[in-house]
Image (cartoon, rainbow, N blue to C red):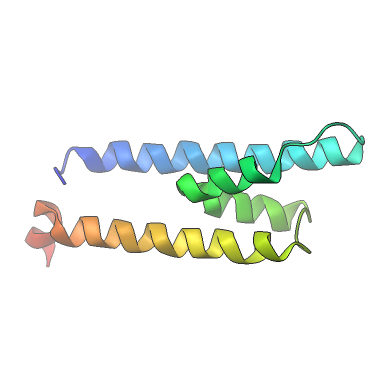
Length: 100
């Protein structure tokens, strides 16, 4: 992976995590007012695409979906998957080879 791509990748993860955080917060506010909710599939998709850290922070901050087993397990697995992918990209990149 070219060295110039790392800031774009960081921006991708930042934006996705902020969006995932906001979606979880919005779903909590919709739940309180008993309106139509954000589908669980959409929340988990945001986590899968890289926003799992933001989703998990919002989940525990707003005490939302903490009793659902899939929301306690899947975001953690997705986060580990993304961390492994980033580590692999770093190690195989010119920047990683230079620093290691």
